Length: 444
Ligand code: CO
Image (cartoon, rainbow, N blue to C red; front, side):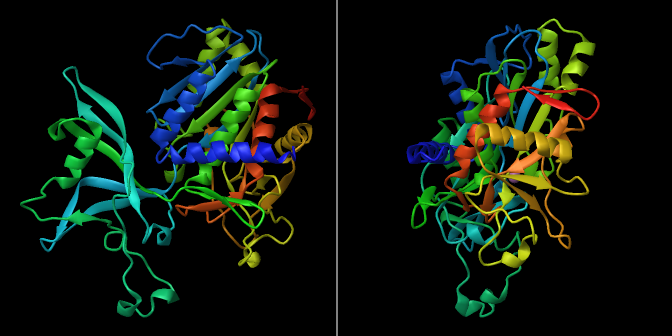
């Protein structure tokens, strides 16, 4: 595991993935291409599925969530699932976005998507990516778009005009967060922004019926530290886990259980969409896998009872400048391995059984792990595990890779941890879990 080139290669691949994935749509498209290259068959929810054992498949929903699975044999014992999320906090472009300022500047009207840190959006090149929906003779179609150049900027107010700027600033989303995109006025530049999007997409502006467009940070990801200890990049939460899950999935050799790589959208806004963890997407796929192998409802439920899910969403590393924010006895650090997350009120799904099983998976994969609790006097975040179990109720553990600056548009993590999660995911997807009904579990 400590062979340096393994870490370097995985980090290079991860940075390429992050760079190609400015939005959940792009991350999903990139993962589809990885699955295509690996020989997986694409399925569509609106088609009838004809599934064969010994083969792998994937299906998307809304072009922003994805479930891939590999069925080792028709009489599989259960499902081994790893679930992560494709979305990240960002600024989303509103309808009728263009605003002219005193006949001189053009800026864009945006709103917050998710719980973002505002400060990192200032004073660096930004651009726009997402999807547009275009009129066709038959109806409408979606098209991904990424304006791949430095396009706009959100300039800070000079300190001379706010001497208290460094004493804490309350950002007003409608006033402070609107990016500068060019010069122009109502006459010469009435639709400059949409014209740009149409030209970029190669379609007529009047054929663009609607858009889901987001700002993104143009700064490329990098490896840094005296000995290259850290990786810094946009969207590590949660594409670092999504990438690790898929890499492990593609390397695995499922034997008794169906391996299921699952990436949901909209975690950052509560998961309550048709492509979010609260939706039926995962359950629908698992039921269709069961039905497709000619199995009964009874067999589905016995398989669910012999299944295991890893909810993989990045975790807080303890911060070198804010050591007081960490729990006294559970202090994850970057490159310390996979973080198992606990919460007594079950914001995280981990319990003694799922925590123990995941420790065994890490041990078999020969990767380090560590534990996270919030301080008892602090409220923590939540994630997708406990939302997903409302639809598919199975043993679940919440884990993540340790990182700093969560929900910044440029986050920092350990340069060795991605490889650890790839190895653990590979072990998970190659194994199966069954219960004896009396508190005992067999990990095969
Ligand atoms: Co997350």
